[in-house]
Each structure stands twice: as C-alpha cells, then as structure tokens.
Image 1 (tube, rainbow, N blue to C red):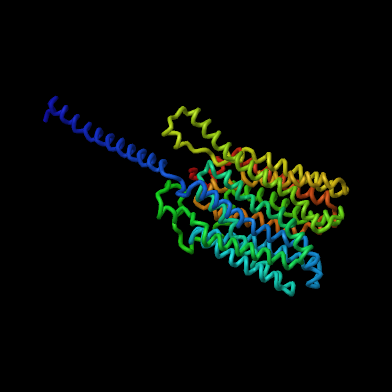
Image 2: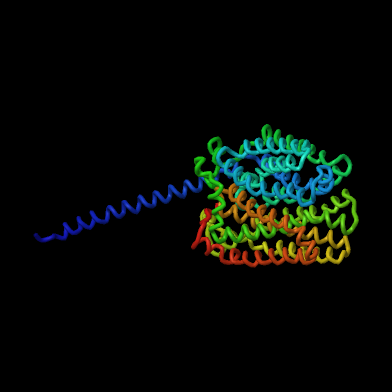
Length: 493
C-alpha cells in the first residue's frame, strides 16, 4: 500500500502533538516547582520574633555555662577538699577526671533524646538532675560520695553541650547562625575562666561546700526558666504548629534509630575525623591550661586563692572577644562567597536562592584563631618555666582564650553545616571527642610538668595542636572533594 502525502502529514501531526504536549507538561511542572520554592522562601525560617530568639540564645548560653562552671568553680578549693576528706592528691584528681569523662559521654544521650522529645523537656530534666548532683556534692562526707555526686552533676549539666547548638540551628538560618553561635559559645567557653574566679572567693570566704550550694541554686533557676520561659524550638515540632521554611527539618526517628554509637561512627568520614581531631587537641590544651593556672598563680607567683581566681578574667575577656568576632567573621565569609558566586553567574534574584555555598567556606579564617591560640600557649609555657612576668602570662591567657573561642566558631559552625538536620547530635559527638581527650591530658599533665617542666609540657601540647591544624588544611582546601568521594553530603540551606 502506497503512502500518500496527506497520510504523511497526518502522521507527522500525530507524532509532533504528543511531543508538544509532553514539553508543555514539563514546563508546567517546572513552573509549579519554582512557584512552590518561591512560596517557601517567603515563609520565615523561624516563627519567633527577634527578641524571642535573643532571649532563647541568652537562656541557652546561661544553661551552657553550667557545665564548665561547675567543673571549674571547684578547682581553687581542691586542696581544702583533699584535706577535709582525708585523701591524697592523686585520689582527689579523680573528682575532676570522673566529671570530664561523664561530660564526654552523656551529651551523646541527651542530644539523641533532644531530637526525639524536643529541646525544652531535655533542658528542664537535665537541670533537675544537675541540681540533685550539686546538693549531693555539698553534702558529701567521703571521697566515694563526692565522685559519685560529681558524675550525677556532670550528667545533668552536660545536656546543653549538644542540645544548645541544636537550638541555635533551629531558630537561625545558616548565614546568621555564626553570630548566634558566637553568643551561645560564650557560656561553655567562659566557664573555665569565671569558675575559678567565683569559686576561689566562695571557697576562701565561706568554705568549699558553698561552691556546690551556689551551683545547686543556679541549676534550680535554669530549670525554672526551661519550664516556664523557654519555648520549644525543635523544627519538626514547630513546623506542626507554624508555617516555616521546609528546610533542616529532621524526620521523626524511632528509639532504635537514636543510637549514640551511630553518631560516634560519623568519625568514619575524613572531614569529620579531622575536624574532631582538631577540636580535641585544641580543647585539651585549653582545658589543661585552665586547670594548671591555679597551680602556677599560687605556686610560682604566691597569689592567694581569691587573687588566683581573679587572674582568669584575662582569658575570659579573650573568650568574649574571640567568640563574638569569630561568629561574625564566619557569617561574613559565607555572605561574601554567596555574592561572589552570584556575580560570577550573573543570576537574577530568583536563581540566587539556588546557589549553594560550600560548608568549607566557614573555615576560611580558622587559621587566624588557632595561630593566635598557639602563640599564647608556647609563650605562656616558657614564661612559667622561667618564672617571668605575671603580666606577660596574663596577656598570653587573653590570646589563648580569644584564639580558642574564635576557632570554635569556625569548627562548630562547619560540622553543623555538614549535618544541618542533626545539629544537636553532631555537636554531642564533637563534645565527646574533645572531652575524652581533655580527660586524658588533664590526668597526664601533673606527671608531665613534674618531670619535664612547664615549658616542655606546654611545648608538647603546642605541637599536638599544630599537627591537627596542619591536617585540617586538607578539609579547608579539599573538604568538598573529600565529602563527594567519602561523604557525608551536605544539604546546604
């Protein structure tokens, strides 16, 4: 049968028509997706007002201050506690080591629980446990009772070490998060500075037991604030009551999925392993320095217990400057990089929202903070070794505190950017590794400075931290490629 020209035209129309229909349908779907994305962008990231979010950050920072404050308020009175409980220096050190070990483990449990039941109940319950542990410490009549009470105290106080960063991630978008994290981290970082100052005068004037009574009162106040003032911020729970941007909302997991061991296993990713190593070396050196300073101030410079505590203000001021400036700098780095990408692509405002800025951008200024920190550490060690200027030591403490806080903003913000829907849990993992190393190095340090002196002890810590900084350069310059090859991928919102 011969095909006529009319038949050919008819067949041509039949074949073209479905193609045109398919193209129209595809354009329609794309338009709907763009419209949905535009509508989502118009929604607020968080339903809370600026004042409410500021209040949440302040309460979270004050609650986060509890753990390091209770760890360090006790240090100036440790010799009095040793004599009162009729024990030895090596035995009384276990009240510190047990606290730090518990501080490493329990945030993993609290962070998982906070993702399951919400932030608010975790804050309230943890502060209740902390208050009970503080009362137990104040009433302890034996070393065993004191160690057990310190573990309970640490278990309660450590909840915010992970859940706090999750709260900040709940209420602030990525490019505003660094500044908020800077304020939040003031709590955990100021504790080692303010603790000896407050605890020194309390222990000197009214006795070491009142150190724990004051902490019990603090815990009770924080528990009441969590119960009656702090709102629930978990994005999954908030999204059920308010219309917010559908980003960084974690799925509801069963109890079997909330396994802390799975969280620790994130160290299998090279970028996370290297980040945690730097966290650990940095914090271990910082924490050891904080615990060693009372020995130096009283033993080398002959200061009283109260005056020794006053010297910690230098590091505290450094923490404030470093934490606030570090958070601000990391946010500015993200915004600048986004503007550069927009200019290079010459995109319009609608397309600009689709640009993804690499998580590693936040690490661009990390070397500044760690560099300042390392200069402070090495100079401080040798000033103490040769018993030189106390004023010089205080200046180095400012650099140690400032450098530590500045670096914390870069690293803390980075791991949250990589795990935006597991911010509390990854911060709990970070706390685990840094606290675990801190417990080891704090226990080793008395033997180190007794055998090799202050200068070489600080030099050892200097090179350990420098080594971790050098390894972090793989993450800074090749982190995106490492994540593409080995994971994890980050949904950067």
